[in-house]
Length: 267
Ligand SMILES: C[S@@+](CC[C@H](N)C(=O)[O-])C[C@H]1O[C@@H](n2cnc3c(N)ncnc32)[C@H](O)[C@@H]1O
Image (cartoon, rainbow, N blue to C red; front, top):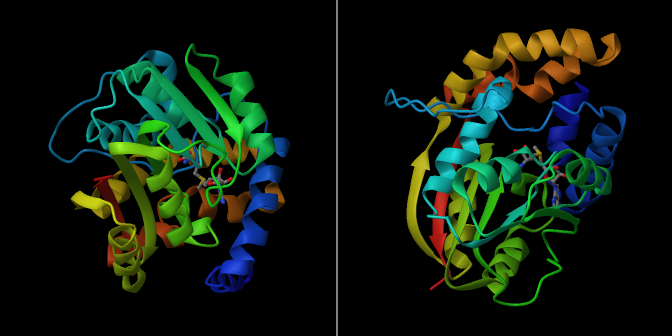
C-alpha cells in the first residue's frame, strides 16, 4: 500500500525532486557494504554470448552486464565519459576497468553515495562528484560519451536533464540511456529524447533481458537480504531489489512495465 502511494506520488515532478534524495542518502549511509556496488535490475544477453569477468566482479554479474552491453554501443575506449546517477559507483568502475575510457566521472545527487564510491572504487582516471542531473556542474562540450542507467525516472524534469546532457556533450558525442517506465509512459521517454534535439541512433526493448537477469540473480539477492537487511525492511527491500516474484519482475513479464535502452548522438 505504502509502495503504491509512493509510486503514485512519483508522477508529480516536485515530489520526485524532494523524495528520492533522502532515500538514496539513507541507503548509502546505513548500508556501507563494500561489496554492494549496483542498484539496477540487471541484464542477461539472450544470444548465448558470455562476458568474461574477474572473480571479484562475478557476484554482481547481471548488474554489471547492463552497463557493459549498453556501453559497448558507445565505443567508449579512450573517450572522456560521464555517468549521471552513478549510485554506489559499480557501473562507472566497471566501464573504466573493462572498456577503458580515458576518463570517467560518476555524478550522483546523494552525497553519501558519492563518498562511498570515492572510497570503494579507487581506479586511476575515475572519480565521483555530487551534483544534480538537472544542473550538471560541467562546462559545455566536456564529454564524448554520457551514460544514464535506471536513474532518470527519479528526476523532476527529464527534458531539462537531456538539455543538460546535450550541453555537456561534445559535437558527435553519444548519450547511452536506459530506464524502466510504465508501458504507457515509455513513448513519452522516447519523445523526450527526440525533443532534446539529439539524433536517435538505435533503441532496444530489453525487458526480456532484464527479466532473465532478475531470475538468475534472485537467489543471491534473497540470501543477501537475509544476512544484511533488518527483518522489518526485508519485504520492502525484496521489492526494491527486484527479486523473482516482485512487482517489478511480474510487471516486466506481463508488459505492464517496459524497459528500453536508447543510443543518441549529439549532432
Ligand atoms: C536506481 S539507482 C541506480 C544507480 C546506478 N545507476 C546503478 O545502476 O547502480 C538511481 C540513482 O539515481 C540517483 N539520482 C536520483 N535523482 C538524481 C538527480 N536529480 N541527479 C543525479 N542523480 C540522481 C540516485 O541518487 C540513485 O543513486
